Length: 373
Image (cartoon, rainbow, N blue to C red; front, side):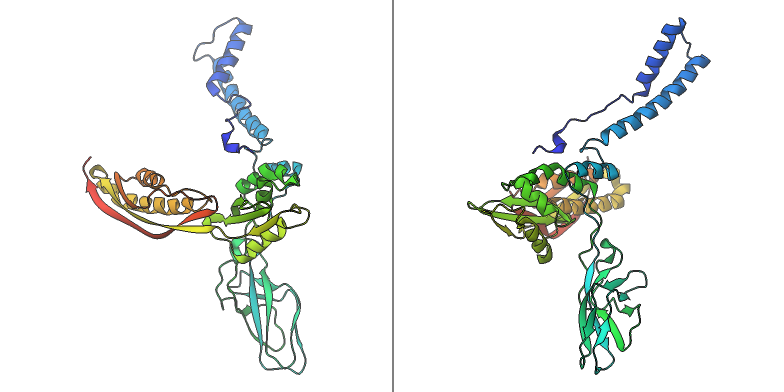
């Protein structure tokens, strides 16, 4: 299927205020039979009307574009997705494993109800997802807990930080998380959702097309931004998902993709589908940049901008599978940040296969000083 990026820009109505004003005045002069001087009150009135019409046309353009996949956003995009039975992926809550410890062994089992909450800071809460019991004669039990607030807000709490029990229980001496909280994702953003809608018709096929597998793989998790689908041998399909900001998927996400793509209603009977992580190609960044003498007073701000440009390049480079390592892109970004000249030792241009992702190893950025033009 063709990319939306290849489509030409479209405007349903002109929003050029000058053109609108000229048309209104021309029509008025033709009807009234008199020319309007620059300071004529009627001309000033018509100019005000032209400005209002231009504003209305901007809204007309916006409203019309919301019917097109390339421009739609928010709830308008949701309605377009409904046409191809593709819903926006909702936010998911972060999860962790909580360990409940009794003050002493009890002669009977101690119940930990579903929904029992613990918190690291009194603002973010994790609740147990199912009822469990501490067996008689023991003092500990581990149970899965989920953040009560969906999204990324629950991610990143380290082992032992979720240690305050909100719902008091008899015999419970302490609670703490024994795994870092992770897995929380925000609601699917417009760009990822738009791409899934674009390839959704491929999912209707029962022949296992490349874009069909790509659609179903992206439907497994909101953080999947790119998917490689290859067939190394007849009847074999290898799927490699890549996460946002170039993160390599965990086994849990690989399993989720595998479960969807191996569903009997999705996978052709003759296909053997394997979901694996992308192959990582490591490159290093080593460069020296110089600043023009005339920008001597801006050195500090340019240094900050260059650092950001390099960091952005590193993220850009690993945000797509098969994206070649391109030092020209790095140089362009550093130059745009204010550098006069850039000497790049590494990386060198490297072709990356569709099943690979290029991820930076060491990053060394040196300021070489000022230079005359």
